[in-house]
Image (cartoon, rainbow over all chains, first blue to last red; front, top):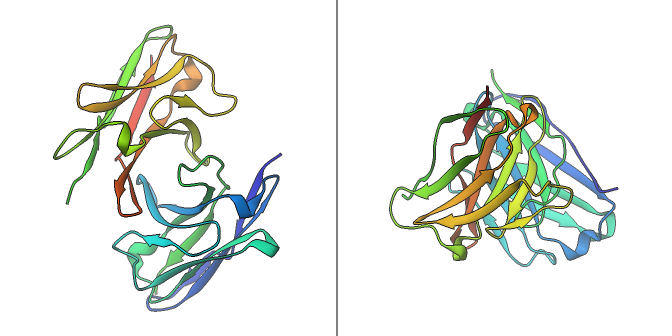
Amino acid sequence: EVQLVESGGGLVQPGGSLRLSCEVSGLTFSSYWMSWVRQAPGKGLEWVANIKQDGSEKYYVDSVRGRFTISRDNAKNSLYLQMNSLRVEDTAVYYCASGQRLGYWGRGTLVTVSS
Amino acid sequence: QTVVTQEPSFSVSPGGTVTLTCGLSSGSVSASFYPSWYQQTPGQAPRTLIYNTNTRSSGVPDRFSGSILGNKAALTITGAQADDESDYYCLLYMGSGIWVFGGGTKLTVL
């Protein structure tokens, strides 16, 4: 069974930082692109970033480029999202998903940016 | 900036057929946008239905199908059931490594 489990969400003040993690099991992690998708409360899905199998390519939505960094550790079957300079509008549930076409999804972790 | 467009809402009768679409504010959607479709019920993570225009994800019943209709990607549900009542999102590849979701369609089965 494929499982993606996100962690690291929480409450942070504007301008603060958080690091999200996603632990993957049940698939050959190192063979997949991996992605982050977010969903603000009551809103639609927003593609955030993805990373190639070996980490050599990374892409970001314009609104997070320069503030967020996606990374991975294939030895630990884990995906990360380092989020700096957080803004109120970054408040959302953050999902990790496998592949560029988001075949498998985690249940998400809530990030709340508020003073 | 090109926006991915979806109908905000749609309704279908139980047993009926509905086609949801995914377009662009400027231009046409083709297979080279690798359209994908996702289903989400409130409080749940999304579920992948279709990728690469018309390939069903594992375990997805064949009453869900994807296609290109005219200048849009389309998701057709035949024999709609009560538990198809969900939000549906399309995802398109915009080039240069960037993917964009549509705003979603809220489907009501009544």
